[in-house]
Image 1 (spheres, helix red, strand yellow):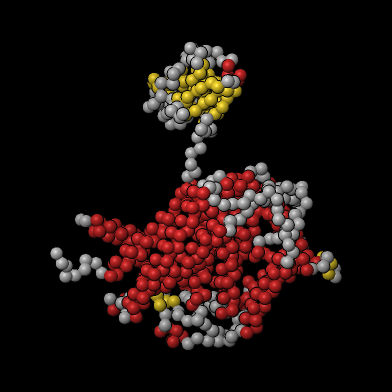
Image 2: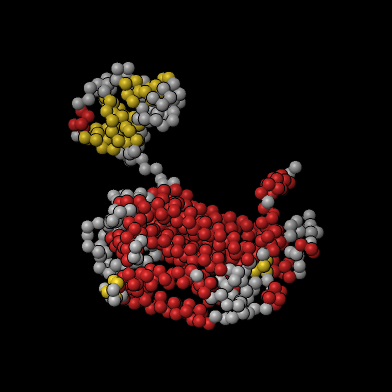
Length: 420
Length: 149
Protein backbone atom coordinates (compact mmCIF):
# COMPACT_ATOMS: atom_id res chain seq x y z
CA UNK A 1 0.00 0.00 0.00
CA UNK A 2 1.37 3.44 -0.85
CA UNK A 3 1.30 6.51 1.40
CA UNK A 4 -1.91 7.99 -0.02
CA UNK A 5 -3.65 4.66 0.38
CA UNK A 6 -2.44 4.32 3.97
CA UNK A 7 -3.54 7.85 4.81
CA UNK A 8 -6.93 7.17 3.28
CA UNK A 9 -7.30 3.96 5.28
CA UNK A 10 -6.27 5.71 8.52
CA UNK A 11 -8.77 8.48 7.83
CA UNK A 12 -11.52 5.95 7.15
CA UNK A 13 -10.71 4.21 10.44
CA UNK A 14 -10.93 7.50 12.37
CA UNK A 15 -14.03 8.68 10.54
CA UNK A 16 -15.74 5.37 11.29
CA UNK A 17 -15.29 6.04 14.99
CA UNK A 18 -15.54 9.86 15.21
CA UNK A 19 -18.29 10.38 12.64
CA UNK A 20 -16.59 13.37 11.05
CA UNK A 21 -18.55 12.84 7.85
CA UNK A 22 -21.83 13.34 9.75
CA UNK A 23 -20.67 16.77 10.83
CA UNK A 24 -19.32 17.59 7.37
CA UNK A 25 -22.56 16.45 5.75
CA UNK A 26 -24.43 18.76 8.07
CA UNK A 27 -22.14 21.70 7.26
CA UNK A 28 -22.36 20.99 3.53
CA UNK A 29 -26.13 21.26 3.77
CA UNK A 30 -26.28 24.22 6.17
CA UNK A 31 -27.73 26.97 3.98
CA UNK A 32 -26.37 30.50 4.25
CA UNK A 33 -28.82 33.04 2.83
CA UNK A 34 -27.41 35.63 0.45
CA UNK A 35 -29.11 38.96 1.05
CA UNK A 36 -28.51 42.42 2.45
CA UNK A 37 -28.08 41.05 5.97
CA UNK A 38 -25.41 38.46 5.07
CA UNK A 39 -22.43 40.79 5.78
CA UNK A 40 -23.45 40.91 9.45
CA UNK A 41 -23.15 37.13 9.67
CA UNK A 42 -19.37 37.42 9.49
CA UNK A 43 -19.27 39.20 12.86
CA UNK A 44 -20.14 36.04 14.80
CA UNK A 45 -17.25 33.98 13.51
CA UNK A 46 -14.94 36.98 13.82
CA UNK A 47 -15.73 37.14 17.55
CA UNK A 48 -14.93 33.46 17.75
CA UNK A 49 -11.56 34.08 16.10
CA UNK A 50 -10.68 36.91 18.47
CA UNK A 51 -11.72 34.75 21.42
CA UNK A 52 -9.39 32.02 20.15
CA UNK A 53 -6.55 34.55 19.94
CA UNK A 54 -7.37 35.68 23.49
CA UNK A 55 -7.19 32.12 24.78
CA UNK A 56 -3.86 31.48 23.06
CA UNK A 57 -2.14 34.74 24.02
CA UNK A 58 -3.73 34.63 27.49
CA UNK A 59 -2.24 31.19 28.19
CA UNK A 60 1.12 32.46 26.96
CA UNK A 61 1.01 35.54 29.21
CA UNK A 62 0.04 33.39 32.19
CA UNK A 63 3.32 31.49 31.69
CA UNK A 64 5.19 34.56 32.93
CA UNK A 65 2.58 36.55 34.89
CA UNK A 66 2.60 36.32 38.71
CA UNK A 67 -0.65 37.42 40.40
CA UNK A 68 0.66 38.79 43.70
CA UNK A 69 0.88 42.29 45.15
CA UNK A 70 4.66 42.41 44.94
CA UNK A 71 5.12 40.69 41.61
CA UNK A 72 2.12 41.51 39.39
CA UNK A 73 3.32 44.84 38.04
CA UNK A 74 6.94 43.67 37.96
CA UNK A 75 6.13 40.51 36.02
CA UNK A 76 4.12 42.44 33.41
CA UNK A 77 7.10 44.78 33.11
CA UNK A 78 9.37 41.79 32.60
CA UNK A 79 7.04 40.36 29.95
CA UNK A 80 7.32 43.70 28.14
CA UNK A 81 11.07 44.14 28.44
CA UNK A 82 12.76 40.78 29.08
CA UNK A 83 10.74 37.96 27.55
CA UNK A 84 11.46 37.70 23.80
CA UNK A 85 8.61 39.42 21.90
CA UNK A 86 6.63 39.61 25.16
CA UNK A 87 5.60 43.19 24.34
CA UNK A 88 4.01 41.98 21.10
CA UNK A 89 2.15 39.14 22.79
CA UNK A 90 0.80 41.46 25.51
CA UNK A 91 -0.13 44.01 22.87
CA UNK A 92 -1.96 41.41 20.79
CA UNK A 93 -3.87 40.27 23.90
CA UNK A 94 -4.82 43.84 24.75
CA UNK A 95 -5.77 44.84 21.19
CA UNK A 96 -7.58 41.58 20.49
CA UNK A 97 -9.74 42.30 23.56
CA UNK A 98 -10.59 45.71 22.12
CA UNK A 99 -11.34 44.27 18.66
CA UNK A 100 -13.40 41.46 20.18
CA UNK A 101 -15.56 43.78 22.29
CA UNK A 102 -16.04 46.16 19.36
CA UNK A 103 -17.21 43.30 17.14
CA UNK A 104 -19.42 41.97 19.95
CA UNK A 105 -21.19 45.34 20.04
CA UNK A 106 -21.56 45.37 16.24
CA UNK A 107 -22.86 41.79 16.27
CA UNK A 108 -25.38 42.61 18.95
CA UNK A 109 -26.59 45.82 17.36
CA UNK A 110 -27.00 44.06 14.02
CA UNK A 111 -29.16 41.35 15.59
CA UNK A 112 -31.09 44.02 17.45
CA UNK A 113 -31.79 46.16 14.37
CA UNK A 114 -32.47 43.21 12.05
CA UNK A 115 -34.82 41.62 14.63
CA UNK A 116 -33.13 38.25 14.30
CA UNK A 117 -33.89 37.57 17.98
CA UNK A 118 -37.57 36.98 17.26
CA UNK A 119 -39.26 33.62 17.57
CA UNK A 120 -37.77 30.97 17.62
CA UNK A 121 -34.43 32.61 18.45
CA UNK A 122 -35.26 34.12 21.86
CA UNK A 123 -32.85 31.89 23.75
CA UNK A 124 -30.10 32.48 21.20
CA UNK A 125 -30.44 36.19 22.04
CA UNK A 126 -30.47 35.59 25.79
CA UNK A 127 -27.37 33.39 25.64
CA UNK A 128 -25.84 36.17 23.55
CA UNK A 129 -26.56 38.74 26.27
CA UNK A 130 -24.88 36.38 28.75
CA UNK A 131 -21.89 36.17 26.40
CA UNK A 132 -21.79 39.98 26.32
CA UNK A 133 -21.78 40.16 30.11
CA UNK A 134 -19.01 37.55 30.37
CA UNK A 135 -16.99 39.33 27.70
CA UNK A 136 -17.23 42.65 29.53
CA UNK A 137 -16.33 40.86 32.78
CA UNK A 138 -13.23 39.53 31.04
CA UNK A 139 -12.30 43.08 30.14
CA UNK A 140 -12.97 44.35 33.65
CA UNK A 141 -11.00 41.64 35.46
CA UNK A 142 -8.16 41.74 32.94
CA UNK A 143 -7.78 45.48 33.43
CA UNK A 144 -6.67 45.02 37.06
CA UNK A 145 -4.00 42.40 36.39
CA UNK A 146 -1.14 44.75 35.33
CA UNK A 147 -1.67 46.41 38.75
CA UNK A 148 -0.80 50.01 38.00
CA UNK A 149 -2.40 53.14 39.44
CA UNK A 150 -4.96 53.36 36.65
CA UNK A 151 -6.10 49.76 36.92
CA UNK A 152 -6.36 49.98 40.70
CA UNK A 153 -8.52 53.12 40.57
CA UNK A 154 -10.77 51.63 37.87
CA UNK A 155 -11.23 48.46 39.90
CA UNK A 156 -11.94 50.40 43.11
CA UNK A 157 -14.74 52.28 41.35
CA UNK A 158 -16.01 49.25 39.46
CA UNK A 159 -16.21 46.95 42.45
CA UNK A 160 -17.86 49.66 44.54
CA UNK A 161 -20.75 50.04 42.11
CA UNK A 162 -22.66 46.91 43.26
CA UNK A 163 -22.73 48.38 46.79
CA UNK A 164 -25.42 50.80 45.61
CA UNK A 165 -27.83 47.94 44.95
CA UNK A 166 -30.12 47.62 48.00
CA UNK A 167 -29.96 44.42 50.10
CA UNK A 168 -27.47 42.35 48.11
CA UNK A 169 -25.10 45.11 47.02
CA UNK A 170 -22.64 45.10 49.93
CA UNK A 171 -22.35 41.34 49.61
CA UNK A 172 -21.58 41.70 45.90
CA UNK A 173 -18.76 44.15 46.55
CA UNK A 174 -17.32 41.84 49.20
CA UNK A 175 -17.53 38.89 46.83
CA UNK A 176 -15.68 40.76 44.10
CA UNK A 177 -12.99 42.17 46.37
CA UNK A 178 -12.49 39.25 48.71
CA UNK A 179 -13.05 41.56 51.68
CA UNK A 180 -14.01 45.14 52.42
CA UNK A 181 -11.10 46.66 50.55
CA UNK A 182 -8.95 45.94 47.55
CA UNK A 183 -5.95 43.88 48.63
CA UNK A 184 -3.71 41.19 47.23
CA UNK A 185 -6.68 38.84 47.64
CA UNK A 186 -8.63 40.92 45.11
CA UNK A 187 -5.80 40.46 42.64
CA UNK A 188 -5.73 36.66 43.15
CA UNK A 189 -9.49 36.58 42.87
CA UNK A 190 -9.58 38.62 39.68
CA UNK A 191 -6.87 36.41 38.20
CA UNK A 192 -8.90 33.32 39.07
CA UNK A 193 -12.04 34.88 37.54
CA UNK A 194 -10.12 35.93 34.46
CA UNK A 195 -8.37 32.66 33.70
CA UNK A 196 -10.72 29.98 34.99
CA UNK A 197 -14.19 31.08 36.11
CA UNK A 198 -15.02 33.32 33.15
CA UNK A 199 -13.60 31.00 30.46
CA UNK A 200 -15.77 28.17 31.78
CA UNK A 201 -18.88 30.40 31.95
CA UNK A 202 -18.22 31.81 28.51
CA UNK A 203 -17.64 28.41 26.94
CA UNK A 204 -20.89 27.08 28.42
CA UNK A 205 -22.90 30.02 27.08
CA UNK A 206 -21.04 29.80 23.78
CA UNK A 207 -21.88 26.11 23.41
CA UNK A 208 -25.59 26.87 23.86
CA UNK A 209 -25.38 29.85 21.51
CA UNK A 210 -23.62 27.95 18.72
CA UNK A 211 -25.81 24.87 19.16
CA UNK A 212 -28.96 26.98 18.81
CA UNK A 213 -27.60 28.67 15.69
CA UNK A 214 -27.01 25.24 14.12
CA UNK A 215 -30.38 23.96 15.27
CA UNK A 216 -32.44 26.93 14.12
CA UNK A 217 -30.47 27.92 11.04
CA UNK A 218 -29.70 31.43 9.85
CA UNK A 219 -32.41 34.05 10.18
CA UNK A 220 -33.98 35.82 7.22
CA UNK A 221 -34.72 39.54 6.94
CA UNK A 222 -38.07 40.65 8.32
CA UNK A 223 -40.78 40.12 5.74
CA UNK A 224 -38.53 38.19 3.34
CA UNK A 225 -40.08 35.79 0.86
CA UNK A 226 -38.88 32.40 2.03
CA UNK A 227 -39.08 30.79 -1.40
CA UNK A 228 -37.06 33.53 -3.07
CA UNK A 229 -34.49 33.34 -0.26
CA UNK A 230 -34.26 29.56 -0.51
CA UNK A 231 -33.20 29.86 -4.14
CA UNK A 232 -30.32 32.19 -3.26
CA UNK A 233 -28.57 30.23 -0.51
CA UNK A 234 -25.01 28.92 -0.60
CA UNK A 235 -23.75 26.03 1.54
CA UNK A 236 -21.75 26.82 4.67
CA UNK A 237 -19.05 24.34 3.65
CA UNK A 238 -17.12 25.09 1.55
CA UNK A 239 -18.54 28.19 -0.16
CA UNK A 240 -19.18 30.34 2.92
CA UNK A 241 -16.08 29.19 4.81
CA UNK A 242 -13.83 30.52 2.02
CA UNK A 243 -15.55 33.90 2.31
CA UNK A 244 -15.10 33.86 6.09
CA UNK A 245 -11.45 32.94 5.55
CA UNK A 246 -10.89 36.25 3.75
CA UNK A 247 -12.46 38.22 6.61
CA UNK A 248 -10.39 36.33 9.21
CA UNK A 249 -7.14 36.90 7.34
CA UNK A 250 -7.76 40.63 6.95
CA UNK A 251 -8.50 41.00 10.66
CA UNK A 252 -5.52 38.90 11.75
CA UNK A 253 -3.34 41.19 9.66
CA UNK A 254 -4.95 44.34 11.07
CA UNK A 255 -4.68 43.05 14.64
CA UNK A 256 -0.98 42.24 14.38
CA UNK A 257 -0.21 45.53 12.64
CA UNK A 258 -2.02 47.62 15.26
CA UNK A 259 -0.47 45.56 18.06
CA UNK A 260 3.06 46.15 16.76
CA UNK A 261 2.52 49.86 16.09
CA UNK A 262 0.62 50.81 19.25
CA UNK A 263 1.65 48.57 22.15
CA UNK A 264 0.05 49.36 25.53
CA UNK A 265 2.24 50.98 28.20
CA UNK A 266 2.52 50.10 31.87
CA UNK A 267 2.39 52.54 34.79
CA UNK A 268 4.39 51.95 37.95
CA UNK A 269 3.04 49.54 40.54
CA UNK A 270 -0.19 50.59 42.25
CA UNK A 271 0.06 51.99 45.76
CA UNK A 272 -2.95 51.03 47.87
CA UNK A 273 -2.52 54.14 50.04
CA UNK A 274 -1.94 56.70 47.28
CA UNK A 275 -4.68 59.15 46.19
CA UNK A 276 -6.44 58.36 42.91
CA UNK A 277 -4.61 59.77 39.89
CA UNK A 278 -6.14 62.74 38.06
CA UNK A 279 -8.57 62.02 35.24
CA UNK A 280 -8.92 58.25 35.69
CA UNK A 281 -10.84 56.46 33.00
CA UNK A 282 -12.01 52.91 32.50
CA UNK A 283 -11.52 51.07 29.21
CA UNK A 284 -13.35 52.65 26.29
CA UNK A 285 -16.25 50.18 26.43
CA UNK A 286 -17.17 51.25 29.96
CA UNK A 287 -16.83 54.99 29.30
CA UNK A 288 -20.54 55.59 28.66
CA UNK A 289 -21.52 53.85 31.90
CA UNK A 290 -18.78 55.75 33.75
CA UNK A 291 -20.05 59.08 32.41
CA UNK A 292 -23.66 58.11 33.25
CA UNK A 293 -22.65 57.58 36.88
CA UNK A 294 -20.97 61.00 36.96
CA UNK A 295 -24.21 62.69 35.83
CA UNK A 296 -26.35 61.63 38.76
CA UNK A 297 -26.53 64.05 41.70
CA UNK A 298 -25.62 62.88 45.20
CA UNK A 299 -29.26 62.58 46.23
CA UNK A 300 -32.47 61.95 44.35
CA UNK A 301 -35.57 62.10 46.57
CA UNK A 302 -35.01 59.46 49.25
CA UNK A 303 -32.21 57.48 47.61
CA UNK A 304 -28.62 58.31 46.77
CA UNK A 305 -27.92 59.19 43.15
CA UNK A 306 -25.73 56.11 42.78
CA UNK A 307 -28.49 53.76 43.84
CA UNK A 308 -30.87 55.25 41.29
CA UNK A 309 -28.23 55.11 38.53
CA UNK A 310 -27.21 51.54 39.26
CA UNK A 311 -30.83 50.39 39.54
CA UNK A 312 -31.53 52.04 36.17
CA UNK A 313 -28.56 50.24 34.63
CA UNK A 314 -29.71 46.91 36.11
CA UNK A 315 -33.21 47.58 34.79
CA UNK A 316 -31.76 48.41 31.38
CA UNK A 317 -29.77 45.17 31.25
CA UNK A 318 -32.86 43.24 32.38
CA UNK A 319 -35.04 44.76 29.66
CA UNK A 320 -32.29 44.08 27.19
CA UNK A 321 -32.07 40.42 28.24
CA UNK A 322 -35.83 39.97 27.84
CA UNK A 323 -36.04 41.95 24.60
CA UNK A 324 -37.32 38.95 22.56
CA UNK A 325 -40.19 38.50 25.05
CA UNK A 326 -41.05 42.21 24.97
CA UNK A 327 -40.95 42.42 21.16
CA UNK A 328 -42.96 39.27 20.55
CA UNK A 329 -44.96 40.57 17.59
CA UNK A 330 -45.68 38.53 14.50
CA UNK A 331 -42.61 38.05 12.36
CA UNK A 332 -43.75 40.36 9.59
CA UNK A 333 -43.83 43.54 11.72
CA UNK A 334 -40.84 45.82 11.27
CA UNK A 335 -40.63 46.96 14.92
CA UNK A 336 -39.63 50.54 14.22
CA UNK A 337 -39.65 51.57 17.88
CA UNK A 338 -37.15 48.84 18.76
CA UNK A 339 -34.92 49.89 15.84
CA UNK A 340 -35.20 53.50 16.99
CA UNK A 341 -34.13 52.44 20.49
CA UNK A 342 -31.05 50.74 19.05
CA UNK A 343 -29.99 53.91 17.27
CA UNK A 344 -30.82 55.95 20.37
CA UNK A 345 -28.52 53.65 22.35
CA UNK A 346 -25.72 54.10 19.81
CA UNK A 347 -26.06 57.89 19.91
CA UNK A 348 -26.21 57.87 23.72
CA UNK A 349 -23.13 55.66 24.06
CA UNK A 350 -21.12 57.67 21.54
CA UNK A 351 -22.07 61.05 23.03
CA UNK A 352 -21.35 59.90 26.58
CA UNK A 353 -18.01 58.35 25.58
CA UNK A 354 -16.89 61.45 23.69
CA UNK A 355 -17.99 63.63 26.59
CA UNK A 356 -16.05 61.45 29.00
CA UNK A 357 -12.94 61.79 26.85
CA UNK A 358 -13.10 65.59 27.15
CA UNK A 359 -11.55 65.35 30.64
CA UNK A 360 -7.83 65.21 29.91
CA UNK A 361 -6.01 62.42 31.69
CA UNK A 362 -2.69 63.27 33.28
CA UNK A 363 0.21 61.50 31.65
CA UNK A 364 1.61 59.05 34.15
CA UNK A 365 5.29 59.23 35.08
CA UNK A 366 7.64 56.24 35.01
CA UNK A 367 5.81 54.36 32.34
CA UNK A 368 7.32 51.33 30.72
CA UNK A 369 6.90 51.95 27.02
CA UNK A 370 6.95 48.75 25.05
CA UNK A 371 8.78 48.35 21.79
CA UNK A 372 11.50 46.41 20.02
CA UNK A 373 14.51 45.83 22.26
CA UNK A 374 17.17 46.42 19.62
CA UNK A 375 17.70 47.22 15.97
CA UNK A 376 17.70 43.52 15.07
CA UNK A 377 14.32 42.96 16.67
CA UNK A 378 12.76 46.08 15.16
CA UNK A 379 13.97 45.07 11.69
CA UNK A 380 12.68 41.56 12.31
CA UNK A 381 9.27 42.84 13.34
CA UNK A 382 8.85 44.90 10.16
CA UNK A 383 10.04 42.07 7.94
CA UNK A 384 7.59 39.81 9.79
CA UNK A 385 4.73 42.27 9.20
CA UNK A 386 5.61 42.52 5.52
CA UNK A 387 5.69 38.72 5.29
CA UNK A 388 2.29 38.44 6.99
CA UNK A 389 0.65 40.92 4.62
CA UNK A 390 2.25 39.34 1.58
CA UNK A 391 0.94 35.92 2.63
CA UNK A 392 -2.47 37.37 3.33
CA UNK A 393 -2.61 39.02 -0.09
CA UNK A 394 -1.71 35.78 -1.86
CA UNK A 395 -4.17 33.81 0.28
CA UNK A 396 -6.98 36.23 -0.48
CA UNK A 397 -6.25 35.85 -4.19
CA UNK A 398 -6.32 32.05 -3.88
CA UNK A 399 -9.47 32.12 -1.75
CA UNK A 400 -11.22 34.25 -4.36
CA UNK A 401 -10.35 31.66 -6.98
CA UNK A 402 -11.73 28.96 -4.69
CA UNK A 403 -14.92 30.97 -4.14
CA UNK A 404 -15.44 31.28 -7.89
CA UNK A 405 -14.77 27.58 -8.35
CA UNK A 406 -17.02 26.36 -5.53
CA UNK A 407 -19.83 28.74 -6.49
CA UNK A 408 -19.71 27.41 -10.03
CA UNK A 409 -19.71 23.83 -8.79
CA UNK A 410 -22.62 24.58 -6.46
CA UNK A 411 -24.63 26.27 -9.21
CA UNK A 412 -24.31 23.32 -11.57
CA UNK A 413 -25.46 21.05 -8.74
CA UNK A 414 -22.16 19.26 -8.13
CA UNK A 415 -22.57 19.46 -4.34
CA UNK A 416 -26.15 18.20 -4.12
CA UNK A 417 -26.13 14.58 -3.03
CA UNK A 418 -28.79 13.30 -5.47
CA UNK A 419 -26.71 14.30 -8.49
CA UNK A 420 -23.42 12.85 -7.40
CA UNK B 1 8.16 13.22 -23.17
CA UNK B 2 4.97 15.10 -23.67
CA UNK B 3 1.99 14.20 -21.49
CA UNK B 4 -1.40 14.20 -23.13
CA UNK B 5 -3.13 14.99 -19.83
CA UNK B 6 -2.11 16.99 -16.79
CA UNK B 7 -1.15 14.79 -13.85
CA UNK B 8 -3.45 16.70 -11.55
CA UNK B 9 -6.49 18.87 -12.02
CA UNK B 10 -6.71 22.61 -11.61
CA UNK B 11 -8.76 22.00 -8.49
CA UNK B 12 -6.09 19.82 -6.89
CA UNK B 13 -3.43 22.36 -7.79
CA UNK B 14 -5.41 25.22 -6.25
CA UNK B 15 -6.19 23.20 -3.11
CA UNK B 16 -2.55 22.29 -2.69
CA UNK B 17 -1.39 25.87 -3.17
CA UNK B 18 -4.01 27.21 -0.76
CA UNK B 19 -3.27 24.58 1.88
CA UNK B 20 0.47 25.03 1.53
CA UNK B 21 0.26 28.79 1.77
CA UNK B 22 -1.99 28.59 4.82
CA UNK B 23 0.54 26.23 6.39
CA UNK B 24 3.28 28.74 5.59
CA UNK B 25 1.35 31.55 7.26
CA UNK B 26 0.74 29.31 10.28
CA UNK B 27 4.49 28.66 10.54
CA UNK B 28 5.17 32.38 10.27
CA UNK B 29 2.75 33.04 13.13
CA UNK B 30 4.18 30.15 15.13
CA UNK B 31 7.65 31.70 15.15
CA UNK B 32 6.97 34.58 17.61
CA UNK B 33 4.94 32.19 19.76
CA UNK B 34 7.87 29.78 20.06
CA UNK B 35 10.30 32.64 20.68
CA UNK B 36 8.05 33.76 23.56
CA UNK B 37 7.58 30.30 25.03
CA UNK B 38 11.27 29.37 24.89
CA UNK B 39 13.26 32.32 26.23
CA UNK B 40 17.01 32.17 25.56
CA UNK B 41 19.22 30.49 28.17
CA UNK B 42 20.59 33.07 30.51
CA UNK B 43 23.84 31.52 31.68
CA UNK B 44 26.02 34.15 33.33
CA UNK B 45 28.98 35.33 31.27
CA UNK B 46 30.96 35.51 34.46
CA UNK B 47 30.48 35.58 38.21
CA UNK B 48 32.60 37.79 40.42
CA UNK B 49 33.26 36.75 44.00
CA UNK B 50 35.18 38.73 46.66
CA UNK B 51 38.36 36.83 47.45
CA UNK B 52 38.11 37.56 51.20
CA UNK B 53 35.02 35.35 51.49
CA UNK B 54 36.84 32.37 50.05
CA UNK B 55 40.49 32.96 50.98
CA UNK B 56 40.00 31.35 54.35
CA UNK B 57 38.94 28.01 52.84
CA UNK B 58 41.02 25.11 54.04
CA UNK B 59 42.63 22.89 51.49
CA UNK B 60 40.06 20.43 50.20
CA UNK B 61 37.19 22.51 51.52
CA UNK B 62 34.23 23.47 49.31
CA UNK B 63 32.01 26.54 49.42
CA UNK B 64 28.85 27.31 47.43
CA UNK B 65 28.20 30.27 45.17
CA UNK B 66 25.39 31.10 42.74
CA UNK B 67 26.14 30.26 39.11
CA UNK B 68 23.06 31.94 37.62
CA UNK B 69 20.18 29.84 38.87
CA UNK B 70 22.38 26.79 39.48
CA UNK B 71 24.60 26.06 42.49
CA UNK B 72 28.28 26.57 41.87
CA UNK B 73 30.91 24.80 44.00
CA UNK B 74 34.25 26.45 44.67
CA UNK B 75 36.95 24.12 45.97
CA UNK B 76 40.46 24.76 47.19
CA UNK B 77 42.70 21.95 46.02
CA UNK B 78 45.49 20.44 48.08
CA UNK B 79 47.87 22.50 45.95
CA UNK B 80 46.10 25.64 47.21
CA UNK B 81 44.46 26.47 43.88
CA UNK B 82 40.83 27.25 43.35
CA UNK B 83 38.74 25.06 41.08
CA UNK B 84 35.03 25.40 40.43
CA UNK B 85 32.22 23.14 39.29
CA UNK B 86 28.59 23.53 38.36
CA UNK B 87 27.11 21.55 41.25
CA UNK B 88 24.54 19.72 39.16
CA UNK B 89 24.63 15.98 38.57
CA UNK B 90 25.22 15.07 34.92
CA UNK B 91 22.76 12.21 35.23
CA UNK B 92 19.37 13.87 35.81
CA UNK B 93 20.06 17.42 36.96
CA UNK B 94 19.90 16.99 40.76
CA UNK B 95 22.09 19.25 42.88
CA UNK B 96 25.11 17.40 44.27
CA UNK B 97 26.63 17.62 47.75
CA UNK B 98 30.31 17.51 48.74
CA UNK B 99 31.15 14.98 51.43
CA UNK B 100 34.42 16.31 52.97
CA UNK B 101 35.22 13.18 55.00
CA UNK B 102 35.10 10.97 51.89
CA UNK B 103 36.44 13.70 49.57
CA UNK B 104 33.71 12.93 47.06
CA UNK B 105 30.77 14.66 45.43
CA UNK B 106 27.55 12.76 45.95
CA UNK B 107 24.18 12.95 44.22
CA UNK B 108 21.43 11.61 46.44
CA UNK B 109 18.82 11.22 43.68
CA UNK B 110 20.28 8.08 42.12
CA UNK B 111 23.41 7.54 44.18
CA UNK B 112 25.91 9.06 41.79
CA UNK B 113 29.51 9.56 42.96
CA UNK B 114 32.23 11.88 41.71
CA UNK B 115 35.78 12.06 43.03
CA UNK B 116 37.33 15.23 44.44
CA UNK B 117 38.14 16.43 40.92
CA UNK B 118 34.54 15.99 39.81
CA UNK B 119 35.23 12.83 37.78
CA UNK B 120 32.30 10.41 37.79
CA UNK B 121 33.45 7.22 39.54
CA UNK B 122 30.35 5.22 40.33
CA UNK B 123 26.60 5.14 39.90
CA UNK B 124 24.66 6.39 36.88
CA UNK B 125 26.39 9.76 36.05
CA UNK B 126 27.65 9.56 32.45
CA UNK B 127 30.03 12.52 32.56
CA UNK B 128 32.21 14.41 35.04
CA UNK B 129 30.78 17.49 36.78
CA UNK B 130 31.06 20.55 34.55
CA UNK B 131 34.20 22.52 35.34
CA UNK B 132 34.30 26.31 35.42
CA UNK B 133 37.45 28.38 34.91
CA UNK B 134 38.65 30.35 37.95
CA UNK B 135 41.07 33.25 37.77
CA UNK B 136 42.12 35.69 40.48
CA UNK B 137 42.42 39.36 39.75
CA UNK B 138 43.45 41.46 42.72
CA UNK B 139 40.87 40.87 45.41
CA UNK B 140 38.32 39.27 43.10
CA UNK B 141 37.71 35.74 41.95
CA UNK B 142 36.46 35.62 38.37
CA UNK B 143 34.52 32.53 37.37
CA UNK B 144 33.73 31.91 33.71
CA UNK B 145 32.57 29.00 31.61
CA UNK B 146 35.55 26.87 30.67
CA UNK B 147 37.00 27.85 27.32
CA UNK B 148 35.64 31.41 27.48
CA UNK B 149 38.32 34.04 26.96
